[in-house]
Amino acid sequence: MKKQLLLPLLILGLTASAQTIYRTQIFNPNIKTLQIGVVGTKLGLPIMQLSSSDVMQVSFDEMSHEAHAYGYKVIHCDADWTASDLVSTEYLSGFTSGNITTDTLSLNTTYLYTHYAFLLPNEDMSFKLSGNYVVLIYEDNQVDKPIAQACFSVVEPQIGISATVRGNTDSEFSGKSQQLDFDLALNGYQVRDAISEIKVVVRQNNRTDNQVTGIKPTYLASSKLSYVNNAALIFEGGYEYHRFDISSVYAAGEGVERIVYTQPHYEAVLTNDKVKTTQIYQAYQDVNGKFVINLQGAENNNAEADYMLVHFNLPTTQPFFDGQLYLGGEFNYNQLDDAVRLKYDGKTESYSQTALLKQGGYNYQYWFVPKGEQKASAQRVDGSYWQTGNEYTIYVYHRPWGARYDKLVGVKIVN
Image (cartoon, rainbow, N blue to C red; front, side, top):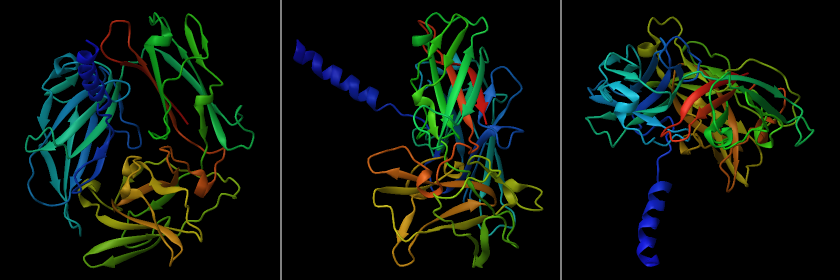
């Protein structure tokens, strides 16, 4: 009997472990500048409110003027960004998929591209439930072969969230870390067992490599849950993001050494960065890793902004033998992959990488990942300081006893 049960259990375990965790990312190299956000909020996170006037826009470029038949499908996800057990009719009204019919050819650009965009919800589709969602983008009805996917959240505010970020932590006194504390006010919202029903996810600057999950409240009361002095909520402060502006081909913007035209395209050589872990913290404005598409004087940034090869360079006499160095930021959806892994050249004694980016303003950091680890650190290159201005997002999910999905009942952004 034991042998008969072993195989089904093994298959079940393999199926569960293979469940896809969705992240915003591109799968086809011809697709660039995938963006998702609420209409009217350029630098906002992709979070909309259920049963409101909020509209989510998804857009991307395909690097040609050729015709393509693109479509999309929306999937509901649990708090861990795996597909929920719900069927589409439970979380959507109308259709579960649609065709992308809005496209614009690039105008007077050295790189030819077609800009595609669509809105959610729309006249064919609307949301019934809160929670996490992923929209799969595919070509020629090949739903199982997406060219890109974009993640967003729909919140039904039920609870209050108050939060603070402080520099004094119980883990160290060197001023490199930040402690996040927060309270959840239930405000009459019914939760039978907070320990088992409430799930909290915390992200710093919308990163997933160092996000915090599975935390439990420090204090419990009938109307409030407190998450205070929790060691899991101590984050590396890091340093402010580097910035550059490539919104013009005629003049080098901030962070750009020079713009050159190498027929038939433009290239932007950024100002050399420095390893400066011994610097004194100096505050300056950044947007915590985000980017904005912009061409100076353009009427339509989406179709008139050109693409440039952007060259990053970090001189250092000694490479890092104990790990890998990456470029971090929303321009690569905070993914740690080969597209942003820096290569060291012993002849020039520097790390470098090149990325094809659309004109605009960008933030980035240098992220070091030690061997055998998955969490990145900005400290190796830029140092770490408690004063650094980071953006923390607290997502609160609720799955009542007997429910089949995670409601998103509160979101708080703390700067």
